[in-house]
Image 1 (spheres, rainbow, N blue to C red):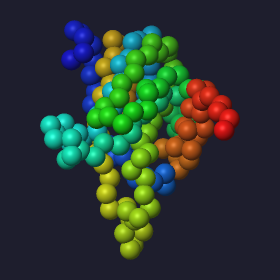
Image 2: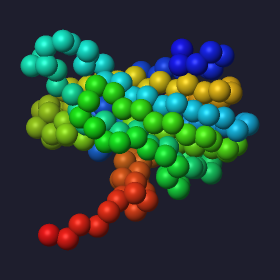
Image 3: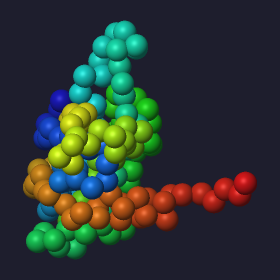
Image 4: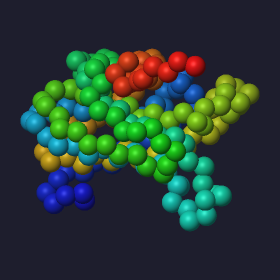
Length: 166
């Protein structure tokens, strides 16, 4: 829907309010031939006209190289969107053949007080990850390793972070 003749995949997911969760939205992407890719992450329910009814989380989507289909791990950072407190974020990339791991990140809604008496999180904001590509891709929604958020943040910080002294 972005460009004529492009392929589109939309994956629904959740944005868990803590790092320890099985519900982290992660996608294994297999690129067979060089392709252009547009990535968008939308927060569900953020299209209200009344801003007082909205509760957007700060969103970021990041793409990392990975080397294994069986146990994908965070590798080198390829591209990421800006981290923004909006209803959606987007980024574009030109990907060479290989394996990539797409991780959806959101942080300002983290709150361990949302854990119920049984230790289960009671509220997960929902989202949709949209991928538009010039060539066909193999896209697989996976359950990542328990440390994918920590590894992703470290890679993002090391690759794009700036040092500030106070």
